[in-house]
Length: 130
Image (cartoon, rainbow, N blue to C red; front, side, top):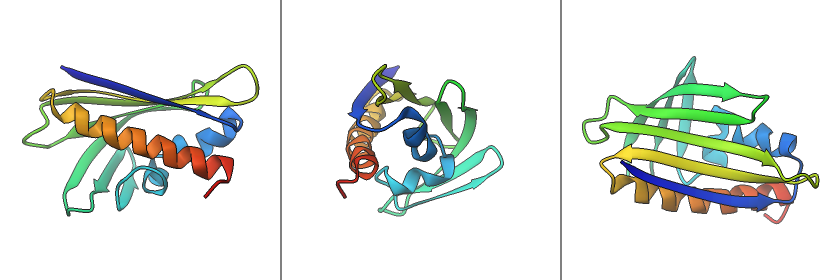
């Protein structure tokens, strides 16, 4: 199984970061996708090339500040679990961590690159530099 993890230190409180990062309907604000739609425990994300991915929301834990989802009903992705955590750094700021485990292995690399770009963007948003 392909596994990637990206992280970014963010100069804001974990609770403030979680308001954006932990909200499944706000992914398009910081992750490199064009739109997302949430209905119950389902989410659909649209990429710039027109591809749409259906996802099951597995977990939204406001106490742990952990969000998990899995890509479903996709003929190419045979196994997937994405996890986003917002961790208190102990100094009033936080670390955002985005990890993905998936098959086929090579597809994890694409999500890893997107996660890197997304975490950089959410850092700028939360730190007020964009």
